[in-house]
Length: 436
Ligand code: S3P
Image 1 (cartoon, helix red, strand yellow):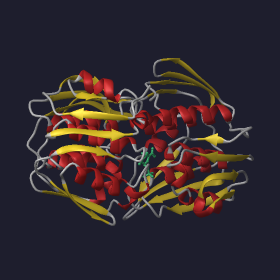
Image 2: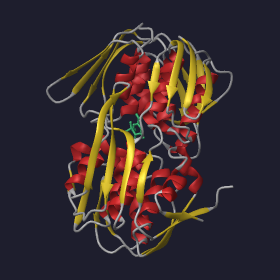
Image 3: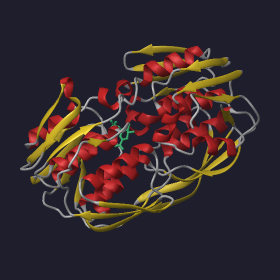
């Protein structure tokens, strides 16, 4: 049974080599594209966290055969189409899952009802529903485009869609719908976001054209393209690797290597920022796997200094601001994080919760409508932090507690399993004191 709280305590140096769990973004996409494709897809290294397991279950309900062959090894037998599910699709805590699946489902003549947990039911879906409606899909939702909602797909027409928010989820939903839109789709991204959907569509045999406009990125996909099952190796998640790596940076005497981390240029904003802060971060064994760059990342305890994080870097590290805020608490001076209003509509309002949690631990934080500024100094700790069920808020505070003056506890620790099921065991293996 999972305890009601989880606690981290300051202790000795962290040492060792570990493997991060599979990348969450790549894992969702592998299952969804595998279900849309004809024939067999073999996935190796799938993240077996609650979010991705909900997507696996959803794909079964849309008619694909999805089987677990062994640890991280999965087989998807796609039908070359999605079929109408008999019952409600529950995507749990996962915004990526529900938004990508709605995009994929919109391309077919079917009705599907989607829901999720209490956090997901509060998150905005209008950003995906707007372009899908412009293409010809219909929906009926709770007030404000919230879940539960029913989507009716089929008969989609071409659109050229300029993303109003920098969101890989919205881009991906439009591209997946575009596979079955007459005339295909065109997406214009003012700021480049993670491109795993584009890369993986190509790996499944689709032609995706990308180009640069003066101040934006353009992605074009022809309609009516058929996907063919393939092999998908899933690299380690840089968003999860961030927790043991930052722990090593802030706990004196530490040296930790995380192997086989996805190093897609649109995902490594945190590593760039930490280096600017003076972090000793080394990348070794850089190679390409399954169309993505991967490498082993080593972090050594470092003296950090505060920086201004460039706003343009936000999409490349959007999930990493909570752990960056924890690192910033140990840096000399101020770390300024702005242009991150999107953080308020993640699994929780991450600006508000990080500010509250850090303040409870004795850290100086200035909260802004679309940003936060953390001033480093001694971290008192000795607090019980409310996470509102947000896995990254929980892990960030547990890392903070390893270098604070006194222990830090978090509530709802079971939610960590949405993205990082082996977090506690992995951290303990490195020598961290994390437990009840
Ligand atoms: C994701 C995109 C990001 C990110 C999320 C995963 C994806 O969300 O926060 O964890 O896999 O496409 P947005 O597209 O809402 O920025």
